[in-house]
Length: 441
Image (cartoon, rainbow, N blue to C red; front, top):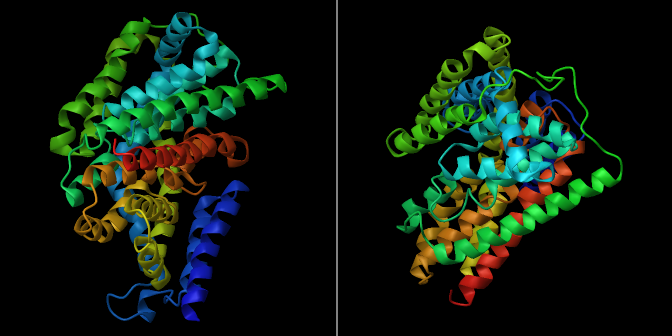
């Protein structure tokens, strides 16, 4: 009976968090409240003083998740937000976007955003950094092309988390976690990975264009806001090719130091991007000091929102019902590829983290499936792709950061397109991967 109540509390808390997020409620309030609901239904003590020494409790587990995320990512968020702001204030973002529009045409502005995100992601730049870095250019592109700005988060997410993040050879952590447990390489299942990546890229972009064209047909256009840095197109823009150098600096530095420094390489890379932007375009700045200050404040809001959701995941993972759910999911009968994909995807949805879904499920799945003789390369690629699906439910940390903190949109406006491209498309990609691997490819 207690197990059923715990499950109701866990999935009910998640459903309530998703509902309140879609309604636009403040995550700093809703995340701890829904986490408290999960804790109560699962019989977790609220305070550490009420629990046995070292035992799980609501306050400790929530704050460990919250503060742990900030401790790991604050400087990266800070550097990423400032980099985006200085690219915007110097006119570098506008310059690059105008050059791209001139080359590929106004109608392909959304494609330019997707490609920019894909290049950075496959180059090893963190998803959060990609969103911070590309957003100023995306805003400028959508403004010039007069496209509804609510599709910017969808373009950012699609270019970052689908056909690049989990593909063979990607330096993103989602492609590297399985290596430890399956003894594979980053290029595991590369033949199938190519097919799946091409499918997700073509189908996803077609869907994005269809949604944008439907909105345009309904009369939607770009609407400027008072918070936008540039209300009118600037005439004194820096050279577009020189303005691309800071982006190249971020890409090159992160690629060089990715293996040796891990995520810390991103701090150096983004700091290098800020310095390069200042040195190359310093005479074009409106107010460099204000751009840095605005970026810093934006970073605080962004990481606080994301950390609030990570704290929710910290409470969920400590509950007995979560352990029971993991046991059920890792014991799914039938094809191990289907079982593995489902387990990783669902756990990623519960924790709001694609890497979390893999890190929790693989230690349990890998030994069992390898003993059954499952092809480790096929399992690697399948769970990698599936991890990038349900992690993008409305309460996911990356989702909240991209839609609310970076783009300033509401979930009601931006999430339908975002969810279609970052949840549905990867699910279809996972199904395709399972089919191709089952056919012996």
